[in-house]
Structures are given as C-alpha cells and as structure tokens.
Image 1 (cartoon, helix red, strand yellow):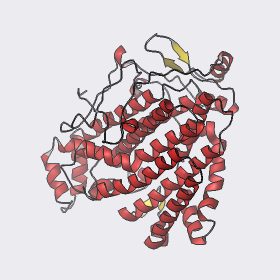
Image 2 (cartoon, rainbow, N blue to C red; image 1 turned 135 degrees about the horizontal axis):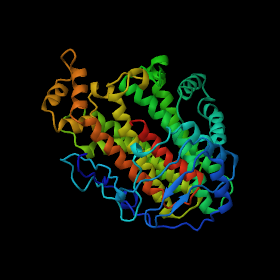
Image 3 (cartoon, helix red, strand yellow; image 1 turned 180 degrees about the vertical axis):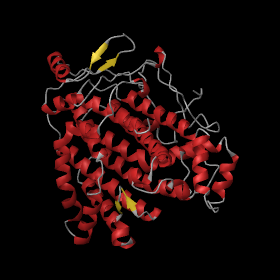
Image 4 (tube, one colour; image 1 turned 60 degrees about the horizontal axis):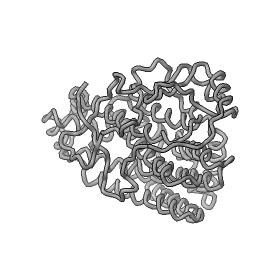
Length: 449
C-alpha cells in the first residue's frame, strides 16, 4: 500500500462552512438501557462500536420502534469500526501536485477512523434496509412529489413522471429524514416538523432539476436505463421542466421562512451553475489538479447533500456545533459518492451504469482515476489531448487508467472522505438513525469493493 497523504478541502469559502472540527462534543440525550438490550436481542447478530479510547464495545441503538427492529433484523453480521492505531491503516492519497492548503488527510486526535471493509465478515449493506427506518416518510414524499411539480401543466407532469419514475434511490430526502430524526432526539422532538418534510421535497426537486439539465448539457439519451426527458420530449421541454422545478422549489423554500436554510439552499443552486461552468472550461485539460476536481465535485454533488443534512439539523433546533457537523458529514459523504461514481465509470458495464461506460472520459471530463493515472503515464495525456481521434483510443485510455493504479488511488481517496464523514457523526447520540447514517457511508464504499 502506498504511503501518501490526502489533504483537507478548503476552497476559500467562509471558515464556518469548511473548517474541519474535531468532534469534541457530548450528548445529554438519554440512553435507554432496556431499549438497547431489546434491540440487541432482535438482531441476528450484534452491532458494536469499538470505543478506541476505553476499549469498551458499545452496543448501538436506543429505539423500540418496529422500523428499528426491522432494520436490526436485516443485519446478518456484526459491524465494527476498526482503529487504525490497532494495526489497520488506510492509505492516504493525493495528487503529488496538490497544495496543502486545499487538501488535508490529517485525522483529528481522538476521533475514530473508518472501518476497513475488507476486514469485515458481513454481507453487503442494502439501501432498502437502510431506508426502512424512514420508509413511511419516503412514501409520503413520493405521493407529494408529482403533484407538487407538475399539477399546473400536463407536459411538465409527464416529464415529472418520467424522471421521478426512473428508479431513483431517493438518497437525498432519505438523508434529510435520517438526520432529522437523529437530531430531533437531541432537541426533544417526538415527531418531524412540517419544515423537515418540505425540506426533503425541495431537495429532491432541486436534485431532479439538476439531472434534467445535466442530461441536456451532456446530450445523454439514457439515465438509469431509461430514456431521458430531453430524449423523449426534446431539449426545449427538458430545459423548461428543469427551470420550472428550480423555480417551484425556490417558492417552497421561501415559504419555509427560515433565512439560514434559504441562504443555504440558494447557494446550492448557484453552486450547480458554478460546477457546470468549471467542468465546461476544463474539458480535455490534462493539467487539471486534484483540488480543482474536488471543488467541481463539491459544486455538482456534495453541496446539495451538505445542505440537505445541515438544513435537517437546523429544523430540529439543535445548536450550531451540531448543524455544522451535519454539514461536514454531508460534504464528505457527497465527495466520497462522487469519487466512487467516477471509479464505477471505469469498472462497470453500460448495463450496470445505465449509460455508456467511460462516458465522462470520452466527453473530456477528467475525474480522479484519470488525474492520478496521468501522473504516471505520459501516453495517456497524448490520447486525451487528441480527443480520442484514433479508433480504439478510448478503450486504450481506459486500460491505461486501470494499469497505472488510477483506480486504486481513487478508491483510497473515497475512503479518506468516507473516514471524515464517519468522524462527523460522533457528536450524535447512539441510535438506529445514526447507525443508518454511518451505514450510508459504508454502502457507498461497498460499491467499489
């Protein structure tokens, strides 16, 4: 394993948004021992969190709801966090040309590291099981989405049905609900608020609008194995449908009447545009730095997830330390997801991806695996700068990325960001909802194991 360092993201925004904090906080939430025992009994195998500072294994979860019991039963083996200090070190990866001010892989002292998936003897994590805790919340959201988006216009309604029915995982609203319920325990709330639920709907509308516009910009004909909106209805309708969803979500956002959340989500919409501009201005640029790639990934993916998780905490009424930690969790999870998606573009088939394999590379969008491979293979630069003019050059480039270690280094970068996301959750009380948030991080990494 290579010995390298991956630096912390610091994109030059306000310090309250991007500075990493050591967790350091403690929860005053009550921890029901009988509930823990009931949960442990209901599980087919125990789930434990290894306390690295005391060596005490804490059984995770304090809820007696039926959904919690169902989630527990879905596990087939124990999940543990493995301390790097006990012998399992994750490789820290960064571009050798990356300034230390933009990327930092230093782990805060006393903060637990991420588990090494290869050390685990359990089955894969299922999104269905993860979302079981908030299944009722997601069902209500699905019922509301189409009527919210398309009720005023039959064409827009048809477009909405196409995109919402295309097999999306609803990961972002699920994260809103999971964080809402995890932080509600801290605030003493017994049920989610109307604002929590509307935030989830707004987030999914914004995400959907961005997908529609992305497909237009990329001239993509397929998404999740189905025809895209612009392929079915034309570019004009697709652009208008995306614009309408952005506008509709902004209207609902304003009606939440929470200035902090309004600013937070409005920044996301701006970030989307910034990300597209950055991507368009760097196509086929073999001098693209890793920090530039991460910044673009933040704009296009992580910004919305970070706003989702922070906004949920804000509506729970918890203090700013917790809301900031939820922002950091969403940011690092989002970056890890983007890196994993970029890896899969090289390692999965078109059938698995629901779009042509290597589509980012052939369009000149250079991602982490390519950036790392370019450091070792000059021939790859020649192929990319020629914009794949020679027959078979795309397949040759893909093989070079694989053979030069670009995939492995990108995998370690994804693990690095996942590690930080796990750290950001340590200030939450032990619960099934926190466990699901941690498992969301692990589910992402399992896609490349």
